[in-house]
Image (cartoon, rainbow, N blue to C red; front, side, top):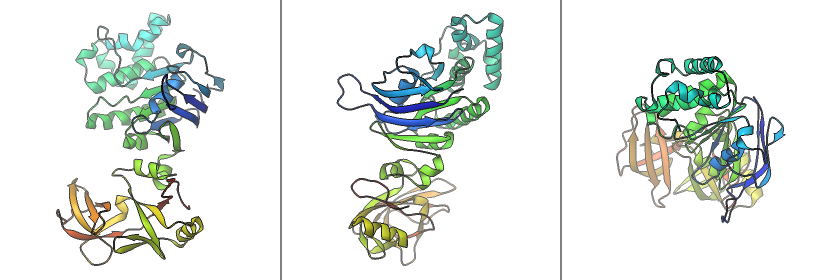
Length: 361
């Protein structure tokens, strides 16, 4: 077990014009489950590989358990990797795959068998120890890869999009198993994914990256309730937050022919900033569909029925600004209908129209 510290850690690939990871600062506590999330090219996998010793640290440092890892070979960092493609030996049984790293270390046969048996019990693989990987499902193979990491008893787990090859149902099941297993083992874990739902449901804290730079590092609820900038606001949440840059009026912001009212402290913050327009963020669940008068008049573009709820995709009549609303009941709205959206109780988020930084509390 160990804590981890990224201190201004940067990585520049050969012949690249920009840093893959740019001055990353993260303090990860012993036993935490941390998720690195971001779009393709954000630097999340590179940051993980830097921790594992698979990429050079060009500037700054990374510490594990208080020890500087710059120049330390991967094999000497006491880290276990779990990859997207499982990386199992097809000619070896499940038990042999799980115990192979221990065999290479010279661990005795009996001790090796015990560690493999214990890990197999944790992962519900006991009945499959004599099978070859080709006879297993995708979820079972991923559990074998997890078992191979567990038997090493490392101080850190590094997981690079381990669920990407699984179908949607199996992903949900396996991510629940991984999160529960990590809580039981208490091993510090750094997990990379591009799926923000996966990040929000698994991580104790989540680091959101964009273009190699850290945007926000917080608990999932903090990311959702108080995004630091417009990028985080739009990336976290499914469906995405409605973000639109609109003119400021005396009591709020103008949306089409309607006004979205703001709190007094928000109006004061906008006045202090001297802005004429502002980027407004409203989550779909804060918008309620109505066929009555008042509210924001919109035209329905698409209705997604999900059974227990539906998402209504619309645009504001006149200016084309797109808005998505969530309805917990089956909506009567149909394509091309004109309806009204009313804001439910909940925060309206404000961001600077140029920098994207959050305005106010």
